[in-house]
Image 1 (cartoon, rainbow over the protein chains, first blue to last red):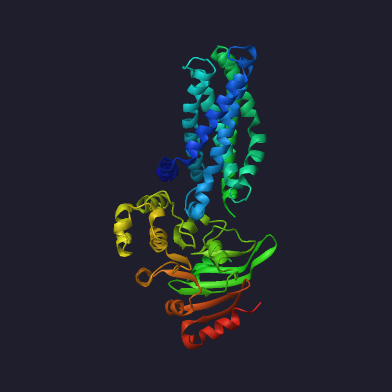
Image 2 (tube, each protein chain N blue to C red):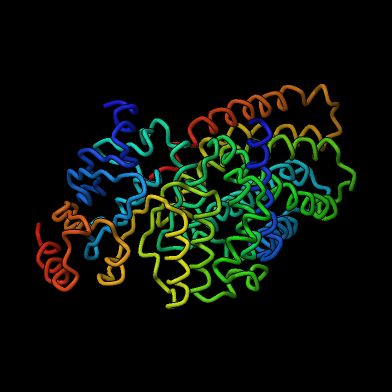
Length: 225
Length: 241
C-alpha cells in the first residue's frame, strides 16, 4: 500500500516534469520574468550603497514570490485542459498522494528557476556567487510556497479570473514566510552566523510543516465539484 | 438502506432521490434508477437534460446536491475511492495530455490505477483498438477519432466492472465504433451510456431511459422497445418537463 502511494506521487511528478520539459512554455516565461525584475531593480539602486544592501533581500523575494505565483497559476491549468483534471480526480488514489505529487512538481519547478535566478542576482548585485545560506533559505521558504500555492492553484482552477484570484488568496497566507525569508536573507547577506538566522528559519520550517499537513487534509474538498 | 441490501438484489448501481443544482438551477430532479449486473443501459436525452451530470456523479467527479448513490454496494461520498476502482469513464473530453504520447498517457493512468502487468495490458488493448502504430505519437498530433479510441483504452485499462460512456461514438468512424462495440460485448460489463444517436445506441441497449429536464420520463426494457417507433417515443418523452 505504501509503495502504491509513492508510485502515484512519482507518476504525477513524472507527468508534470515531462510535460514541462517538452513544452518549456511556463519555464521560459517565468525565468525571463524573474531575470527582468532583477535587472530592472539593479538599474534603480546604485550598487554598493547602503540602500542597495537594504533592499537586496526584498528584491530577491519579490522576484521569487511573483515568479512563484506565475508558475502556480499554470500548475493545474494544464490539467484542466482537455479535462485531464477530471482524469486525476477519477483515479482511485489517496488525495494526499495527488496533493504531494502536484506539490512536489511545483516545488521542483520553482527550485530550478531559483537555482538559475540566484547566481544572476549575485552577479548583478555584486555579491559572491557561493551563497549557501541564501540557498538554504530559498529551499525552506519555497517548500512553504509550494505547500500553500498548490491548494490555492487547485481551488481557483475552475474560476474564470484565476490569474487574478490566486495572488489575492495566496499572498495573505504566505506573508509570514515572505517576511521571515526576507529577514533571514538580510542576515545571510550581512554575513551573520547560522545561529542568528535560526529563529527565522524555524518560523519558515514550522509554517512548512503546518501548511503541508493542513493542505493535504483539505485537498479532497478542493478537488471535487 | 445498507450496502448489503443493495448487493443482495444484484443491482450494481442504485440511485435514490438524486438532485443536482448548479447556481440554483436544477440539473437533476429526484432521479431514481437501478442498473443490474451485466446490463447495458442507454440514457437518451436532449442537450441540457442532465445526462452528462448523471454520469459525472456516478463517476464521483461531481458531488450530488441531494440523494444517495450505491455502486457495487459502495456508497458514493463514503467509499468513493473504491468506487473509482470499479468504474471506467469515457467523457466528452479525452482526458489525455496533449504533450505526452498516447503510450505515456496510458502508462501514467495505469500507474495511477495500480494496473498489474501494465505493459502487456496496455499493448493488448491498443492492439484490439487498432492503435499499436499510434502509441508513440504525441496526443496533440492525433486525430479526434484516434484520441477518442485511446480515451476508451484509458477507461478500460484497469478492467472496470462498470463502464460509463458519455456519447462515446463522438469522432469515431464506423470501424472504430464496431471495435468499441466488440470490446464492450467481450467484457460482459455493466454499461451506462448516453447517446443522441437513437438507432445505433438502441441496438446495443438492454434497456432505454429517457432523461428530460433532469427527470426520468421513460424507462423500458429492450423487449418492449419498438425500434421503428422509438423516434416518436423519444420526441414525445424528451419534451416532457
